[in-house]
Length: 524
Image (cartoon, rainbow, N blue to C red; front, side, top):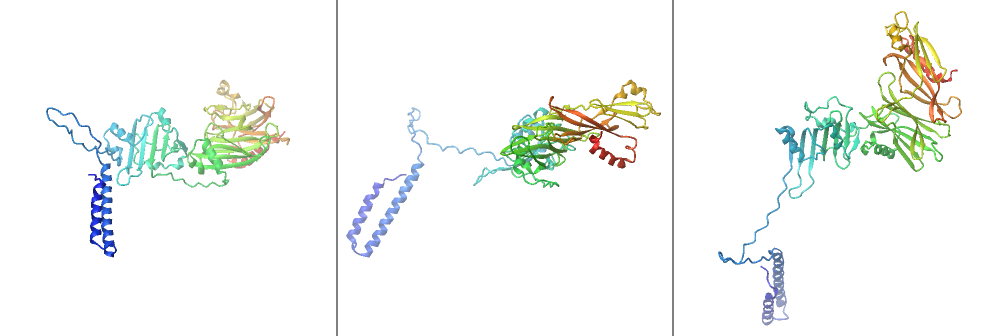
């Protein structure tokens, strides 16, 4: 009910007249008594006014009177009904293992309620812990720890990593998914084959095994990767801002910066103007320092250039050297990285880069391309066999020729027991055949005539039919041909694996080999 304030005025006026007639206007008793009564009346008025205001907010909207009907004669209509309370959101709190479901359909349907699926899922195993904190007296953000193993189609794996940043495997503990592996889902023995990812906008991590299309995923408000402190001897301190650049150019998460090692720092005049600082970084992958991406950062004044070397991917070792190769007075960057250890001297990529404006121009490249093709540089060596265990190595680009005797008495198909060339070797033209590994395991600048224009000394492993059947080491000296804008062979040498070298006196012979490696191009 709401009251009209005018109804209290006669009451207040009558009490004032009575007090004036019965009390002494000047007495203290009148003043005190009248003040109390007036104050009481005012408080009553205020409380009633407040009640009127509160009640007025709860009044229902005016309702239209329905037309009178003959059957009832009712003209008041129905009483207003209270509005229905809002439907409460279901509590999503759960602690559920996928093994609790009887069918694949039930299992995947439950998972869809807690995780977005970028593609169809063939099957999944998971453990979902979710604390729904949206209800209660003081709602708050929810907490969850969701660990999932997924099997998807091979062509769909990329959908799960879209928008994510790379991590190195050392950053994620594979044991997080213990208890979810089955005969269908297994990643045992796959260490080194995984790709690791992080969502930059949330605490969500993926481990992807591309060959098996198995994905390990964790979405958690409580888990953070534990970064192990890796200390490397010879680490060059600082350059953290450039390590961030190296991570960004490879699309790695910034948390991998501590896994980026400063491998080498050089300075030199790459082009006209200021001296440049050249930093070679190792962005470590596949078990920390075992493999890495080589990333080059060049700082010239306020200009910064950051590029990944060798598009073929990761390597085991990288180094660089600075030298003026084309004779223009500015230095070029010689880069060399080892990509594998397949027989002989292993697999290597080598290149010569020149700074041209804001990019690196490739003057020379030998190794694997981004498509997996091997781009070889032909150095012109060949081998001829003759009776008497005679081996003759020649180089078609130079006048180099070396003959040596190697008995190979353990029964190879090229010579018989008397040292004569076999019919098999002659019929298959093997008497003029020698395998030369296309990889340069040595790629080093040398200035043989002290004119300031450097040559490049290279070394290659050579073999007969099998890579393990070594013939020796082929050496070449490469020089820049300014007319054709390419490198060419200008000098050749060869270190044969003779009977003495492959015998028990190997260690004694090794010192002789090292001396030859360092000085062969100085000989006549």
